[in-house]
Image (cartoon, rainbow, N blue to C red; front, side, top):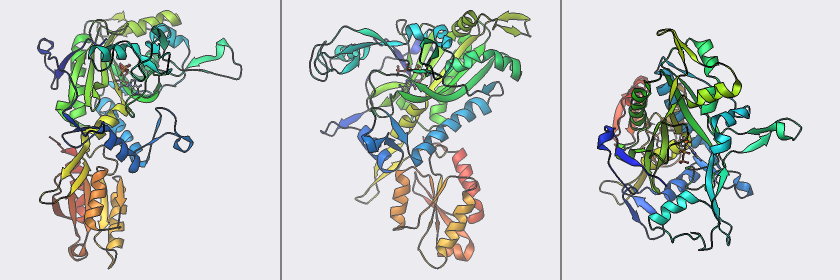
Length: 485
Ligand code: ATP
């Protein structure tokens, strides 16, 4: 049962936590679709993702596979852009944070030491009639909120089994012989790859406490219920950073990272601050290793849900790995000349959940001034938009396409670009609005006379005249200074 306290961004001192409930302001269209004040709904975003090549159901030609998704040409760009923005913020901008890319399959003792073999489970109940499976804690929440009838299957009203613990780790066999010794797990979190490499990094990269190790990679969980598009899947990507501090300094580090991580979603991913909040884990909810934990939650159409976890993990993981591997993995602090096991503050963000939040937040259906026309636009931060600059010739003759091609080719060196000469110019702008392209360049007859083009801005639809040689700098400058709010 969730027992959270909530506070809105910007972070407030713990004494001023607010209790909030509910999803974003939505209206029900009568067809079971919840549409927010900007015309966004899960159904509309999913449909756009499919039709414009962001995200497809996986192995669709065979009928798809439950809760697995493939990122198409635009999806892979936005995902990579968010990942790069995270890496820049966490690794490049901090001289005391270094990167790592650990293997997905790790020695099975890792997961005994971390507690995942014994504890990484959810309470599972089955419906005796329709055989659907549910997380008992989620059902309880729905029962308490009065959303569904007590203690029966929400799908068919059938009788439910007693809850039993279901371990979420996937197993597989390593090597040609299938015996107990070849059993390995697909990692359920990237964090342990960092902990088992703690000594390697300390010995090889001259880091000094406080310092962080960051990595982005796939994690796998055999989730009991997978729904809400890419929100909860069995295969997903995490962007994690473990920050190692002197014991006693963890509370200050925890506060610092809470603030920094929340600000990242607003400033760099471009998410509306009022759709973000902190949610503090109650004592019953804290993981076995955690001293304190906050989630950053986003107000998805299906309610406030976790986007990132920030955990004060104490010295639990390093200590346990030390015990299990039988080696000394303490840290020698040259400043104080003492040895200790560092304390850890973890920031653990879901890459696919960030993609979903960015798309949901950016999706707007806007009525055009004085016209009976709606435009669908993704107000994505230019840094994460899949295509940064589209280049169009106004007409398909008189050398305009050749000139536009030359400009696009040059811009391609620095930005993700797209060339389009098909259809009316207004239609071409609309197509770019729909996928969130922040800048469109149009080559017209004036371009042939004075080497200037029209630069059209997605959000305001303003059009400005700029010299060809100035396009790249302007795009760079506007991206750097971009503020949606
Ligand atoms: P939840 O309570 O939603 O199951 P969690 O508390 O188990 O999440 P963590 O173990 O803290 O999640 O993992 C860190 C982050 O990884 C989460 O904040 C989330 O963004 C992401 N994540 C976790 N499980 C999934 C999943 N099944 N699908 C997609 N992303 C996930």
